[in-house]
Length: 311
Image (cartoon, rainbow, N blue to C red):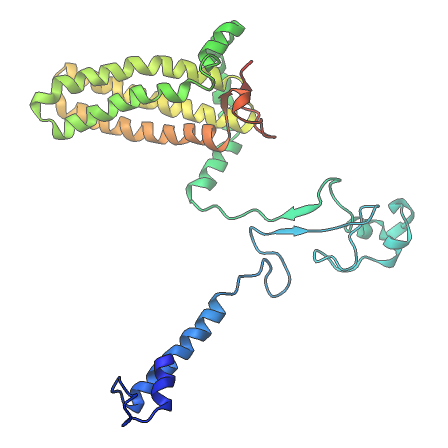
C-alpha cells in the first residue's frame, strides 16, 4: 500500500520515481493494500462465546447466578423473568397455581453454578463407543466373563501382582506389546518375506498366542473391579480380543497343514480384529483412566473409579 501511495503522490518524471510504474499500477497497489488492512482488522476479531441472540454456543461455558432461594434473576439469559409471585415468596408451596411455573425458574441441582454445553465429538467413532457404554446386552456378556476373571482376586497378593502394584502402574498395557508385536511381524513376513520367511512367521505366530495368555490374565485383573460403562466396554474389549486370538490360532493350524494362503488371510483378519479390540482397550486406559496407578504419580481424579492406588 505504501508503494501505491508513494506512486500517486510523486511526479512520474521526477528522479524520485525510482520504480517506473503508471497510474494503473499505483491504484492497483493502493487497492490491494487497503483490502489487506480491512481483512486483517475483520479476521483478527475473536469469535464471541455467544451467538447474536445471546445464547451460548456449543463448547462455551455460561455462568448463571441465583439468589439464596435458588431462583434465577430476571436478567438470566436462560429464561424470561419469572412471575412476580416467585420473588415475593420463599416457599413454592404457597404459590398455588403458579407453583409449577415458579419451579421452572429454580435451580435443578444445588451445586450447579455453571451450565456447560458439551462439545460435539470430533470423531464419528465416539458416538459408537457411547452406544457400547450404554448397551445393556453387554451386562449379560460381562456376567459370563466374571467366573473367568474372578480367580485373579483369589488373594490380595495375587491380585496386586497381576495388576502391577510392584511396577507402579498396570502391567497389562506393557504385556500387550508382545502378542501384538509378534502377530504384526507374522503378517509382514507373510506379505514380504516369501517362502524362506514362512518358518519364522509360524514361530512368531505361535509366540504371540503364548504371550496372549498372561496378557489376558492381567487384563482380567484390572477389569474385575470396574462397573457400569467401563465394565461393558471391557467386556466388548475381551470378546473382540478373544475373536482375534481364535483367528490367529486357526491361522497357525492352517500353517501346520501347509495351507499358506488360508493362513495368511486368517492372520490378516486377526490383525484387523485385534486392532478394533485395542481401540476399546485404549479407550479404557486413556479416556476412562482404568488401571492401577501409584498415588505418587498424581492425584486420583473424581470419577476415575477404575484407578486402583498402589499401597
